[in-house]
Length: 209
Ligand SMILES: N[C@@H](CCC(=O)N[C@@H](CS)C(=O)NCC(=O)O)C(=O)O
Image: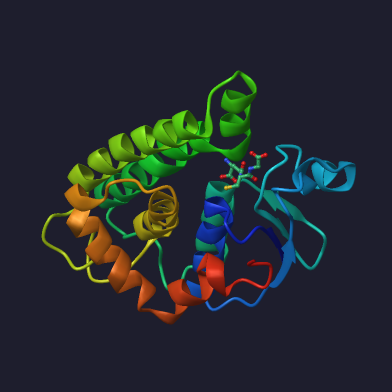
């Protein structure tokens, strides 16, 4: 399968981690977001949301939206599982993941920050904006996870870490104060020590610069 991706995109990073965890090979197709390649007509016809990631399967089926792609991966390639079997615990894992995917990422997306700047806000104001939403989201995430396990909800990484680790990449990038989130950065370190997360890191992508 092909994965349309951008090295620094946290939503692409989620899918790269999941593909690696599931042991699925893919061909990365870089989409240069800084150059605006996501709005080019050919790409926009593939992904009308004009963002990455997009997955194109061998039969040309197109999948968009990182969380829907993760659901599809879990349903079609159930091992190793990204979600626990217990339905209540599944809801808790999904809630933590959605704090990042639904509450933090959308208000910090490239086009949102570009819009803020086009309305006259400075780069520093844009960074403060991003860090504020990250602080709020990480505070909630920290309270939603299991306090006593090596990973967010147990002994292995899954959907929660797939959303957390890319978001923490962004938090480091923009100088977000992570001192209050030592448990989250410990989980991040544990995840990045595994081959699946390490290979998915932005700096390990072919289009990294
Ligand atoms: N909700 C979508 C968001 C996709 C998205 O917008 N991704 C960002 C990169 S992290 C992007 O491509 N942004 C381009 C832009 O804002 O112009 C998903 O989870 O796939």
